[in-house]
Each structure stands twice: as C-alpha cells, then as structure tokens.
Image (cartoon, rainbow, N blue to C red; front, side, top):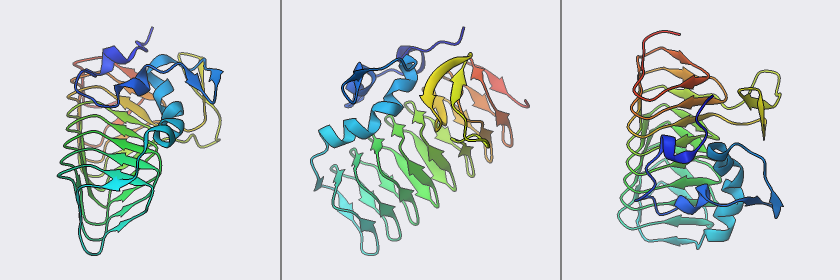
Length: 222
C-alpha cells in the first residue's frame, strides 16, 4: 500500500504551519480524505482562519500584492510579480519577476517562486524552490524540494473526474502532487494528477511521473 501519513514525506518540526497536517475537520464536518492529502482540502479554511494581513518584507516597485496577504520579514517581491490573497508567505522568500502566487498558497521560510512560475492552492515547506517556468497547483512540496525549469505538476484530469489513490476516494477533482523532503525533479518533468513522491527522489529531465514513487528512487523513464 502507498504510505499516506505526512511523516513519511515530511519533517514538520521546523514548519510553522504544521498544524494544517493535524486538523481533523473541514467545514465543521469529519473528513475521510487520505491523511497526507487532507491538508490540500483544508488549505482554504486554514488561510482564512490564520491570515493576519501584513507586509513585513519588501514589495518592490512594479510588483502587485493584494490586500489579503501576509508577507513575513526578509521576503522580497520583485517587479512584475503578482501575489493574490488569501495567501501566507514566510520569512526570507523570493517571489521573482513575473511569478504568480495565487489564492490559498502557504509558503514556509526561504522559499523561491521564480520567473514565470505559477503557484496556487499549494503548500511549500521550508527551502523549496520552483525557480523557473514551473506550474504548481493543489500540491505540497516538502523541505528543500527543487523543481527544475519547466516542471509541471498537473492537477486536473482530462475528463475532470475525481482523483483516487489506490482506488480510494480523495474527494478531490483537483490534486497535483505530494513531493517529499529533499526530492528533485529535472527540467521539464511532468507529474500526472494524484502523484505521490517520497523523500530524496531524483527524477531525470523530461520524465513523466505518476502513481507512487518510494523514497530514494531514481527515475529515468516511465
């Protein structure tokens, strides 16, 4: 069976929002979502409950930041970037030129969202990077995950149907990927909706990833 507990994928000790992985409710109702994936479904409510809009970092001239956003100390939003609320951005992050950070995004510390990368409804743990031309939707990146240029984490099936893991319902029709700590995806790699990648995985450029990829795997071609 595919591991479905957060501690298989992430070390949460230094992540200031680790409680999002511990909550057992969504909209006041008990949820049946698989444990590691449930944080994606909780994300909208979590940001609404925990967001206290404030800009402590630097928003450079030419950047666009909406009002319902928290930006912590040391973070820089470069010209041409657009940050949409509700979103929470941690310390010492870089939101680079022409990046788009969409609603319900939760970034830890020392995160890089780079040139022409689009991120929405996703969680980045500390030190993760989507530095060039990436798409990250409805996904979770662990600590120190690196996405090479052009990586796409697809989050929607062609027929729009529900995404399942091992035949089990996720209750989601938008779900990209879970990527464990210290994993790295090479340039222009693509993940299919509902991909689970363990920690310390290496995927070569141009690979197509799907299903469950266990810890310490090296993926050259699928």
